Image (cartoon, rainbow, N blue to C red; front, top):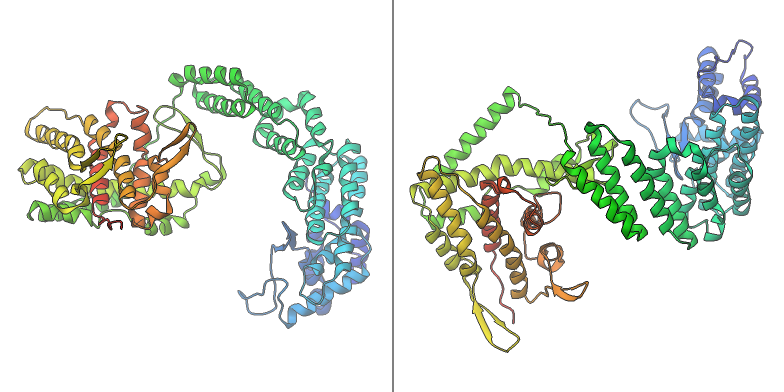
Length: 619
């Protein structure tokens, strides 16, 4: 609740303002009125010197400490508007302001003022700050803690406890930076954790979280007994209304604590799974089944980490039974007239380009597709989406695949999601249109056939070059990829021919898509083998051949491929937030409607992109 404004009628000079601050700085800070007091006095005084002193005093409180360095909420340099020097770099005018801070360090006695001035000076220019400033700042912060506790006992205002939380975090960061008064800090923290019941659990948790992050200062022995805080809180009935906080923070910190202490963490993972399961049980509205599914999915992960096979199996069964009932609302965002006009203009341009290209001989058409301008430029797309912000960046995004399996995006996934969305749009509006208007009309006219396509691959690319292998019996085998690719290529051309020549015929691209997808992994592996790059990796049961994502991540392979092609292959085949063809087909996650002409065209694009490379013969 907003407190009444402070009456400054009796405050005529700065010395009287200083007296007010010495007397009431604690409450003025807690109640967020201190800045108002300083602004009001600056505005009411008519003395130029007094106004400047009030401004400097105000600016001392316009810094926040979020981490080690001070963060300026506002700047004032006395120079031209729009120009400023970052603290602690100063011009002559700012140097006077800094000298004012040093003077206030000498004058101040209130711990709020002492901590503020000395902390700022400690972060000042080299040659000025010394140990005394940091020590005095630490003393000031420590002295405030019992004062705020006492004030809470007096008026019960929760803001006093919030101030304690911020004070303890400032102390941890300052002591970690300076290594001063570490023992005193640890004693204070221990007293807060174990002897001060008025400090609520959520504050203790947030301070413990920072302690866990500050490994330079705290050792496992410093956390002895800390898990008891979480145990005690779980026994309270109040934890039921804080399930969200427990599943999104408290349990994580308890698990990190147990890990740091070297004690059993599985019990905490199991408790986390139990709470997710209970959250799922409370969801009984059909429109919230997606949330129920998310909770069960989180429970499965927790039980896996706990090593509790039975509970994990039960949760998996619950999710399986729930999947048919998970429904998400569809939202259609129609394109406006300008966007439609742009799409039509682009489509007209691409159709004309493809029409002219089809006048060329087949081998020239295929060669042109290999180096086509219509493939996405990952670097350009990345730059374009770099500055795009989304409201969803503020939330945890839950994604469902076509089979209603759940994947939760992590901290920096928003950036990748925006990139993948932009990349996918480019493929849709440029790449796929271009491929469609080349292949479909070309096949319909008979200009493009599986014979001349396979002949091009055999005669113009490395896919037609023989490759020798020695089997376990010592027999030397010779093969090329054309014979292995031919069934999928022939089937694709036959399906398109039947579709464009027969009204009412429904083509099926299931066989060519499945065949070509799985062959692509072998193609990439053989590409590496021809370069004398190992494709053997260690699996659960010994050595095995590398999967497609292993090959694409190999730095040696990436030196041979254009980065644009690596990105395209990852988007198409690997689990990079893209189409993930290899996984979806290998695990039979597609239904018949997923085997589209567009996917077949992307596979053909990938085939000709990998075929373009000339392989250096190994010595």
